Image 1 (tube, rainbow, N blue to C red):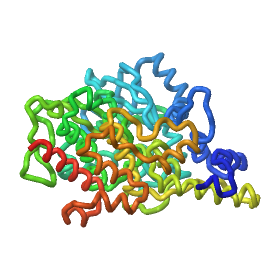
Image 2: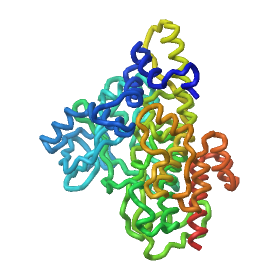
Image 3: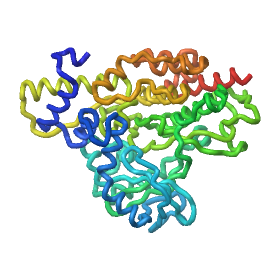
Length: 444
């Protein structure tokens, strides 16, 4: 659609706009992931990781030499255990999450996952793109220097814990401490398995639809907690956001459904879902307050491959309009700017739909591995999804979650839900309701 308007390749729009210096450096970095080719990476998902690797390369090298990270705990759930200086013994490098590397560490012989952020990068992105993610918890706190900002952040993280029914199911990774070390910030979290949900192939473990419904419901519950109880959007939902956790049968929640109570899941005693569940991580990186209706900069884009068609169209329209104004017409500009996008719960629901598609199809990606911006745009806007690899019980729900038009997506997800769900207009609850029904119907 966009390339037919003047027949300008999308990559040229990006290259020329970066050349004239229209955008701030963070917007340029996000666009460079789409428009350029790294020697170390071909597909877009790998390019996203290369950008993070470059930011942290020197610090990672130092961590590998020392084998220990000593951080100043700014706030923690347990003031006795997580106060003052904390010595973290590095056990293993787990990989790159969004915005930073993740390590397996021990603190006083207890295992944790430790995620690293650049305090300077975080502050710079917030100044250019507005408060979101880790800074989004601090709407009312002024940026009065890195240490003050992060201290307030630590206090806020632990003062705003959800206490409703979704939070009691513990489907989000628990954060134990927020810390600072030189120019870097750390988040100390529960240490879980490193297997994301799309690595669990239903076909290889029997393909029991009750198990599949339970694991899919885990993902929806985590999103319900965020949308309903914490009142935030995730904006970085992808398969890697849901990590496997081993549990005892007595601890497996929910033991009953949220919307079909008092009916119970009729699980067999040997059901795998009784001892395995999935919890959501990375929910602080890009999230924004639901009540904040303002447009958001590209800093809120987690993975490009999981943003919905309407967000892609916003991006393309902005690029084309800016190209006509500042490249073709060569109009001057006084200061660099950011690309702003409207972000809603629709973004999370689309990304959850892609994530569940990948899981329920046994690892099949909805649209391959786009290599460029043009590939990604064509994939998101033009792909006709093949739902044949997905168990028939889940096809209608998934096809609704992956409707290209937002209004049709909303209507299909809400269709068939009781009034108490429709009136709240929280799509994650509607998805959870339907996943419960699938689990109950196939388990009875």
